[in-house]
Length: 145
Image (cartoon, rainbow, N blue to C red; front, side, top):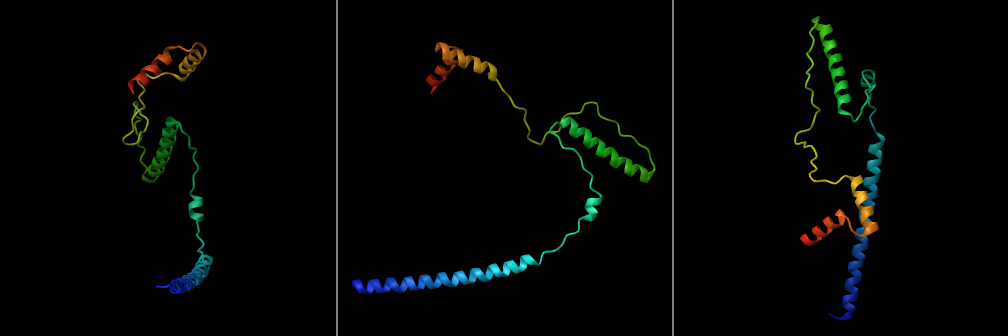
């Protein structure tokens, strides 16, 4: 192939490329118009029934408070069901209540840990004197590498 033929071929490919871009832009604009028309036809959802039966409750991170509110909610539900059945049964409360944990929950374990306050004191000693128990531990860890 000669130089002129290569340039002409590249020019033709460039024209096809721009034609494809124009067609894709037109298709994209049509799709946007259709989506806009669909978004205008939204349905109204009536939640007035749910709003009437809504009961707010406080959420806290303390698990004992959560248990108390759960017990209150359960007792309210039981009192509602008891009033319908006209039986006055009381549920015995368990004396050994344990906090709820999700399956696979493990308590954090810290063996041979250093409290932050002690760590700050040791760091200050090491900064002043250049030597402390903390510096010995650091040197031992560096040697272990």
